[in-house]
Image: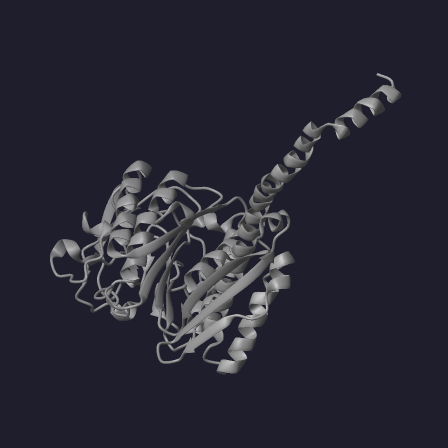
Length: 423
């Protein structure tokens, strides 16, 4: 079509009354564009709300940590700076200050903040801005934590730098927990090194929950070459602190009251003489560091006894009396169960599947009691068993190299030690 022809037709259209359709269509586009803009502005507001939620939550938690160290005015200033520092883009530009309520009687801090997000195309339908809001409340100084570190100390932990990495990660975890402590004994930790047995202090040799009936047999040859069996039964004077699995089904339980024969703990000859002893719940940070540094890799794997004695340190009554009752208000109990290998030996069998069945029951006993269980698989081990032992899928970790242990333990420590939002 030639240009002069196009101009003639355009002139005819403009002089025609039917050209009003263009004007009408133009007006119709306004709400359409406005609604399209509303969708875009809603997405922008949603993103700003998410940033605000995160910033307010973080500020409330951090303020709770410093509430005992700062005055109200200092806290308010710190909170506003925290919120501002965690915002970006449009959200940062529209933030001025938060509405902050500090109740030192109830030990709560409430943070509320609003943002006004300017609209774009939504202005065409009369909406100049969108307001988003967020609030959070935190508490301080009221929650207490008991944590058991049930750590594989078997011979395989001596390879690939695993024991050194475990020590470094554990010491880092202890430091994080120490730094999170606001009051004496708010956070207490036990250390449970395990192989096929566990070891306790020989100062406990007269405790009524122990029994001395385990024996071992050695063989020697007489002058004629005949083999002679020499069987010896453990006693208090020969006992060096090692304990084997209890009789089933008590090997997967923690009885607060121990009296019947089957519930007693069998003192035994040490299969691994250098196994580090259990340190019961304590907030003595130096003692905890020494316990970790004293661990040595030796012997075979019995995850069941590690889980069972981790639970024992968190349960009131024998064999340890440090743990508070499970019903104590605002008390949380945790266990980190770490291993680098599959079950190989317990007091009864060398069948991995049979020992796995006992481990499953021990983990379930701990969870049923109210202990939240983290599990960590270090390079090797029964993945499915450890996944099922954990209290939730997110509480199972595995590492493909020993160097990954420290960030894993840091993550767990922060999850455990952080002061939870109350709403």
